[in-house]
Length: 451
Ligand code: UDP
Image: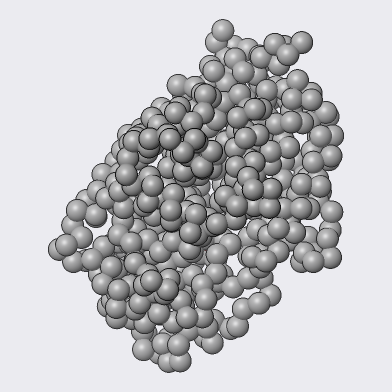
């Protein structure tokens, strides 16, 4: 049956409350909205506000934002039901509040009666609710395939041979960065419980990646899970014109082509004082222009001028711009003066950098970031800033990697490779999702199969 001729299918989406999850869900919604799907995205009011201005009038005809009200726990800042800027120690509290909204989500499912639920891996209760109402559920993994493969291999029998050596390395760095994932109280680990639930209850897995970047990891996923796995990436935020004339963009306009690094660590990661100092000195020593987004957990930060070494701002003068809290990242990466990205390797940041052909100076902090950093290096679009045995950064090292990636002869290959990825992404267009629309439509029809 041709999906274009049938009535629109109703999809209910439930992303986790982080910027890095909301963005790919919204971009997926936009793609599906052009393929005869009507989408409802369910999230907290604060997150919906951040999405609202990214939906055009035309898109709003088929994308609706549905509020999910979480209980106001006293520990959480009022109405701040998002991870964006949340002090990291409050993340488990936010997760608890989110989990206790499952009953409200159930009511939303009942009211909207969707044909399909697309949920995020951080809410294993979503597919269970979908199942109760006989609605098929699809998991959308907003991470890369290497990360998923690493998680799955945690579940594997010890005698499973992994087909490439760097996977072991990735797994080690992941476990080092986030040991609780594999050793929670029940002995199973957070991620393991999530994945076991996934194995049982979802019908198909969408992954925000593409085969030219992670083909070999995607090919291996069937060893661990018998589910249809569909790469739908890269789904990255669109550039709007809103910030075109902002101070930052005007400053960037004055810089030479490919002369500047953008320095940012995402929406929920914060550097220690020591890391900030090393980075400041590293940027200074590199001699390369920079825009640095300096960020602190909500309500905790000192003034920006107090957060960097004394007289740093005077010394760097016009060579550097410090931005407080938030910058229009996609616009900056797309600008012709940007020649490198000092990044924590959040998956969205990684994909955005590749989309705009910007090579990466990788400085992963936690979660999936060390694994993403390895992927970036493995495909030759980035170079890692190595830490010492105690996990400390070193200013000379930072400066050297920045110079290599942005300017030195030794970085030509990395720069070329990043540009190649920009071309691949441009050429691929929407091909990946196009090939799977009919399968999604069929899944939507499968609700009847439960009866
Ligand atoms: N972002 C931004 N401006 C900032 C910091 C982050 O626009 O100053 C956006 C960035 O473009 C990306 C998202 O926030 O789309 C962060 O997602 P990512 O997966 O890279 O990192 P996370 O915040 O999840 O660690």
